[in-house]
Image (cartoon, rainbow over all chains, first blue to last red; front, side, top):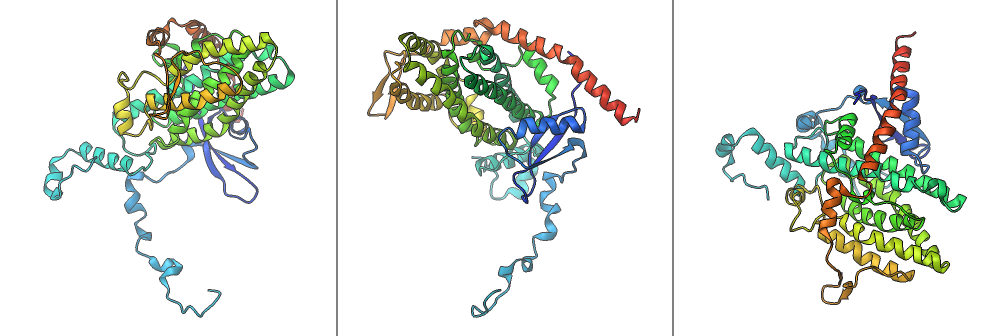
Length: 95
Length: 326
């Protein structure tokens, strides 16, 4: 059996105009044109999107789940970033 | 479950091996209904179980294209032909979603395909039965997809994130398949006497194999215990089979077809249908390669794969050529 795996590409779909792109899955393809076409055939057979991004899986950089706590540590003691941190008189409207 | 660390764990924890600690954390996550993702730590057996189960599921989708593909050129109308093509294309898509999910576990597509072609990986035995008449397209959509949906709806809650997401996507697409099949059955059972007989004959042939799709009885199933503890499976074979039967009996009555089981009867105590004995000898015969179509299905797969080989080679060569600016 031959072993020529085509490289994988991650597929992101924008469900409607103005919405954020969401990860849908991946496809195998030899180049970017084929990746886009395969992504269309595989992930948008029912008008699921208005636009597709594909990016080679190997080009994606991810944080390490095992380092989740330390990696996101800078954000876990800054309650003043939330509006509920501030006490404001109920009489003050429109805040 | 999983909380075996004693309260004075600071001293005792040191004596636990690293992997025992990891396994505890893993099980706690599962118990808390959190999903496991590809880069998370997982026990080797969990990984292997997933590769076996998800790839078997993927292979079933892909091999499942053959019995239906058999009728595309002979569909009785343009409408039914277009619908059947769309359905078979969906099966290809479902196979690909599932291969993608399997590949996140560190195995390549060609390794998976090799396992299928060498007979090391299984696919659902239902696809080793032949499709003899157009009514079989109805029976497959209604019963085979119906049984698959029961299983897949339950698997949307599986603990492995990529598998769960594939299941959610598949379930959304699958309900058209079952309606498509039921429509064929309902048209035929309201048609001429000959058509009615064809519909009944298809139900007679596909009913029992559909029940077998849920796998051996819980008392016999080799894979159920860890699969439930790890929440890979969310319902047992017997429970899912019962759910399918309860749903399907009334659908059959509605279109005037008779389920081929003299023991089938509503049980007011359990609020479920009792049903007759499944022929497990037949099940194991087909699983072990002695069904009607086992060889044909794999030979077709090998042929299609090898005939497409030059396309993959040419595409790769073209992409390398472009990268090198030639």
